[in-house]
Length: 79
Image (cartoon, rainbow, N blue to C red; front, side, top):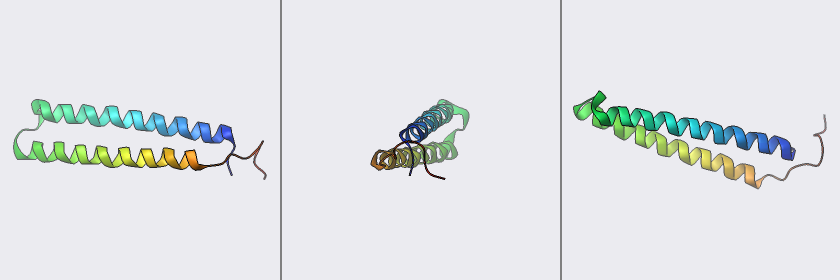
């Protein structure tokens, strides 16, 4: 089992990755939407990026839910 400190550290890391992912994907979608890739190819790429974003958001939400379900151990974990 994990201690409260380990669970909190994992939560911070997951939230950091989620936020970084959101910024990166939003920047890519804006780039495509602003005309970096025009036509059907650009439309497909934008749709793929949005689907990828939804999938990752679901995984981050699930990971945070799993952390919420953990019961921390008292003190340091045993060796």
